[in-house]
Image (cartoon, rainbow, N blue to C red):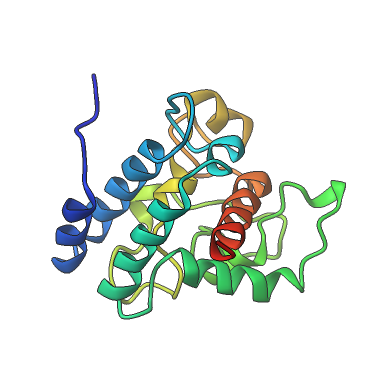
Length: 181
């Protein structure tokens, strides 16, 4: 079944109505449509690297504006960059959640790392009361069945799974590169 075609106007309307979860899912669809080259069902690191910068900026602007600076890729990037200074990526902690994931409220268990797991998508906070940078999140949650199992989930996305630093890093790198254009 083909997903419906969404536009930036659809996203803007959902955001203005504070329909955060629906807007998050439309954001994912818009990002997938903005990937240059072949069709993707989820945003792999390779797909993230080829998202149109213009589309990424347009989507971010809508999120930041509607949330009064609470949500958006630029907000996530700022937090990620600040927290990256405290995180040493080694082979031993590739499944350890980045401090960013805890800061934005994506983790379901906040015991000392690396024993933290990701919340199931429906348990995220879809309100302005969510931590800064909490949304959009579906770009990180939407995984294929196989990807979900590989990250420790139950085949239905990121929920209960471990970190996927490659995907998180790829999105933040794409934002960095797009910000230089």
